[in-house]
Image (tube, rainbow, N blue to C red; front, side, top):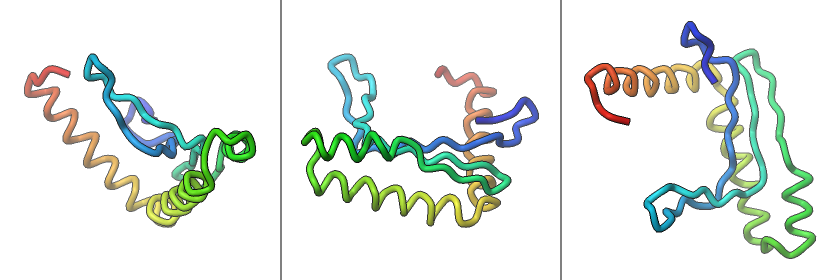
Length: 108
């Protein structure tokens, strides 16, 4: 999430299993229940772990899916949260790229 001055307020990373497309070509994210939320100031929260645990206990997901969600969560923390300035720089490049394409008249 960006502030009006294009600085980052917070990152919200949804841990997903896959991206599929429905019959209309709209992307559908297959959720792995977990979310990683972190800020430029170094705050970190793993959200919805209880939902992941419940899905596993109820048999909605397999042990492999459960373990994969936890591994993905750990990877997100390692790759994105361990060096927030690097993540912020990467996101700024993406934002500038997208803004440039919009400025050039590309339709969304």
